[in-house]
Image (cartoon, rainbow, N blue to C red; front, side, top):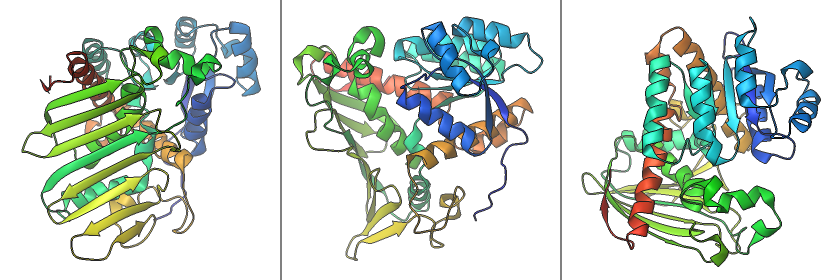
Length: 390
């Protein structure tokens, strides 16, 4: 199924807000967007320091006159050009996402935004209404969701290979912030400051990734109520948590559990999703993303490998190289970005059916991520009590 052909009609003229020199996430966006020639980076407001941003933009071969001091100037000036931008990616601290995303939509641009979209469900719903009104795509970079075997798990569940779904166990628990590393690292410091990070740290920054992957595997599952307990083991991070546990009861009786942590000492990444059915289970671990563990009760464990003919066709749509060659995070991001580009093209021609078929983490996924965090914080702050999901 490896084609190697271009997937979009023409590269989408694209800009970035944030993601300047030294930004790991900015580099991830550019690698993903440019890999399949789906986007062309033509403009940007790359840094809060205009001169530093201009110098960095020029190093990326962006014309100096299109390296702008801020996003307001970027959107206004590009709107005056016949070859102005069609889309923008937002790679800035959380506290700025809502304002930039709203301004981009009002300027008629498609958007790819880092999560969270914003800090409250009210703001998220405002962005969704605006995106629908302007008929623009808002993609959210749940980058791990681009790994192919997540689609295999989705198809297995939908086909009934696991039987009736009973439990979903999710985790994203690394150990790199077991000490107060933010004291010497500005890139971490804002993530533990509620003024910039919002109402949560690991719930919003880490947990929403496996939560979305589970949503992708089980799109029909709906939370009925949840209970969240969160802790600040590094005391200076309070009121934001660096560890949390969430129990979820789904409509229909299935149960979910999510553990998220930045203080799981010794763990490299620790992101896993395990779905347990009445006859079998599947487990995906992002440190081994090319394998899916498939366990049928009473039978030997099977390890399903990326790119193999025995997988469902949907799990092979994004093959870039033959089975046995490992693919990683940049490939996963690239799979999302080319789908974002196809969604933008489809929306521009009014083909909403094609948009829905692409299965991207879109504005609805962004709204749901904000809603989930808001409910978790509400439960935790009330004393770790069950709350109806609202």
